[in-house]
Length: 322
Ligand code: GLU
Ligand code: ZN
Image (cartoon, rainbow, N blue to C red; front, side, top):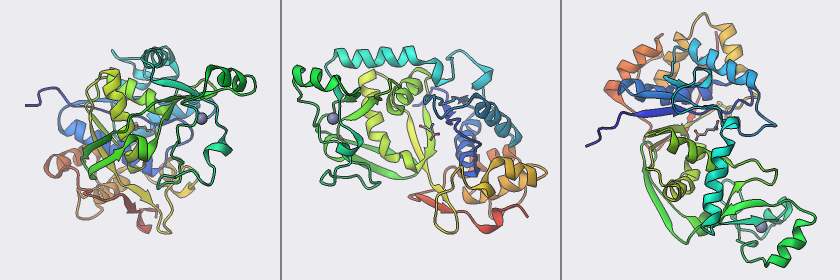
């Protein structure tokens, strides 16, 4: 029997104003937590100093609040598992990194982008190259030689092993770490710890039991499950929700002004119409009636997640402000 309280999180990267897809993701992370009487954590993923701005993080809190979503810990509110800004957690990532290195599982990779994307390299479905393990077997001399002109990234060595898990939305997903992914980067050549390491360290330390996020991260999950094992944390449950697509078939992005939360807020008196639209997309409503976030919690309690196998959702024209 599951007795632990549900702990969910929303983990946005403050690299711009949120768009409706980000809000949809926040909502789908928030609803099951509130429906279960659990705890919600807001973690700001400002790991990349070049792309993150404090002002965007503050704006995110304001936008989430405008939609009627709240959180128990995190962001500027702080809490017992803080800090909740990844930029302030570097020492922790370093500790895990050193732990993995001490186990002999980490090696420097000197490959350039060009070498990684070489035409003959096998690629994943999304176009990312599968790393060949080229730098695994460099001798100390070769490393010293390369280090004179290049700063290495650091990769985690993966075993020839299949990782399978059941996603709460997408069903069974499996991947062979070595064949389908290859040794992956846990620290970039500029010294920044990689998302894969940071997200597992944080979700592990923060006791997260349930991860709801976009389908674009589904194929990161086997890598993360492997890291949970290595770092010694129990893995959460995963729910990968569909990505919102524009009617023309493109993924909503922060560049798409019509779905930008700033634009949407300027064109709506309150969040209810937008929440109704999202409730419809989530299969919680039969038609896009105006609702509050709290009202959707009651619907979620009855209906739960309804995205079985859906990786994309086309955003209808009438979600645009009238
Ligand atoms: N920070 C990531 C993003 O904004 C989300 C990471 C996660 O939910 O695991 O895309
Ligand atoms: Zn390499």
